[in-house]
Image (cartoon, rainbow over all chains, first blue to last red; front, side, top):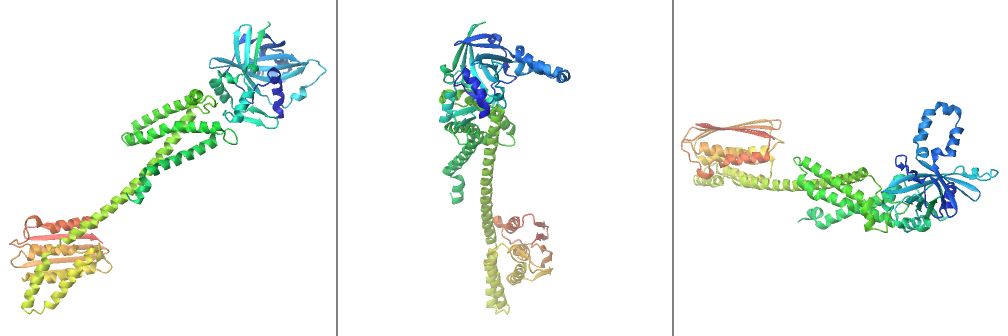
Length: 225
Length: 348
């Protein structure tokens, strides 16, 4: 449980009661690209930057840091993998700064039942002050995923409706929802352990059910640039 | 309806059997489908609905397809109809859980956890299991019916044999008694012996003939008695040759079988002939095999019964042989102008 707390924490910064899943909603074959999401966005005085991961500084740094031998030996494979991989070619990098820390998230889009959904997963946290070092805390953490419904009101506004974790947890406790999960009675938390296919099936069926998307779990992003 | 039939056929028992099957299936499904260590309310609902989706396909197959097309001729049609039913109900199951159930159960959240193929496999397994159960049940029914039929057949055979044996000419006894009466009037020395022979014969006819099989030596002894009495009764000069060869002990034969042939020979030969009468009997026993030959000359004045009783004795014996020695006998009858021959081979 400790392993998943940290990634959860990153997402909790954005949304206090969003649900976390051990499996992603998207797969390489189902992920899509929608570049309308690229840009700098504001919400409640918080600024978010969204860019293609393949165009991000992190990606460029990763390539740069690859050992020369591997680069030479596996150049074609690595390049292709990087272009094709969902992590690189179909992912967006979301950055934001808060409490002297810079947070990095992966965002993957998927269209289900004509509706866009984004799968968020934390990537990294960097201290804004180079003297601080928190990277050790991130080691050995299992990445978890959070899901939000994406609605473009217009080119300047995006609304993200995160799945309401409290609602889901209440249903789990009442025995009203049939989805694989693990609960932690000590901290009274839970994490969804259902497969990606099951997650997609749930979204297909209940993606338009507003009970799953509480207003408190919604964020409206306004385009800054 | 007897007790056995009640056990298999009673509608209440049939309902209980089906109920037991589905309850067992529900428990099994619940154990497979539950999400947590203990089944939640939604697991019960989901399992019940999943199982309910199997009902129509299973019962359509059992109550309609199988009885109507479940034959060798209708197999292709059966397979086609069954495939269509499986596809249709798999589609209904998938869509019900993936889409429609949200309308019926808005406060319970579940999806279709299986692919189309996996659901089809569930249907196939259930249809195969229930078909096999029905077929095995039918097999028990058929087996039971066969037993009953066999029993009835046995009873029928016993009755028929009884009736056939009862057809042994009762006139023989009256005629023999008349002859004995004449002997008594003439103070014939053969009288005591004849009465004893008749007594033995009657005892045999009355008691031994109730059994399906009797010792061969008894049957042969009776045959000899019968010949002796016929000689007395005929009052004519008879040339009877009785040859017997082989081991007769520990062998069994159907009672009155040989007597019927003898009776026939006397009827057609001795009784109908005006003189120079002969009857030749040749019996040979070899390793549980009896060869019986009887030959007699035919009388010029046919005094034998005419009309509906004519040939009744031989027809009677043929039927008895069919009932008692199916596939174990060979009967050849030669009816020539002046003589009548019968050859019988029997596996004892």
